[in-house]
Image (cartoon, rainbow, N blue to C red; front, top):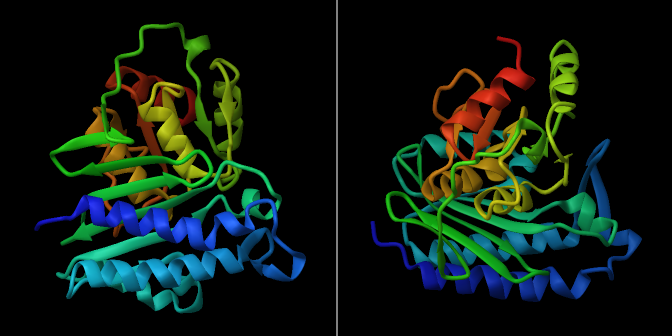
Length: 267
């Protein structure tokens, strides 16, 4: 399958410039809604998803679209991931709660799946204007410069990363909270797109999540894998976009992955 990366990048950049940036730190209360308690959506989320959906299908005729906001309206659309046709997966505005508060980080996240595998991914920060992209088997880049994670040789206390315990079962929280105290700086940014960028650029050595919605993680997992990072479910099995399994660790190398697993998850 030929993927026109330049065209996809242009669509994402243009859409963010038109639908997100005009409302950055300029959002009015009537433009914010709650899909459920604690789950925010804005007019920018919806407008961005609508525009991306139409533009991306035009770039790849015959493809399908799965967007976060469309799934909220119709959960049965998740079956789209099982299609034999290419599927665009869209998180139109990752970090919506941050955006609604006039804060960062935020990102637009897009990936393309084919036969239940992620084959290409893009993560764009419209504020910092950074574009991460990857294609299966072809590596990843940040603003056109190739990226590769490096093995971490520092102490456990110097391991920094994204640690989100919000959705952890109560039985798992004591172990995770105790283990986190042995690590360096851990943060829940509210924006997975930011976390994956921090991982592949070396700012973080790991990301740890329990809830793994496909639009939040399929793009980042492919980008992490193509940078050379070690990724997997908590039991070590591969992450697959159509899977409903819970728990995910991505780390700069296999040693760090195992260390995070041992520190944060019961053996």
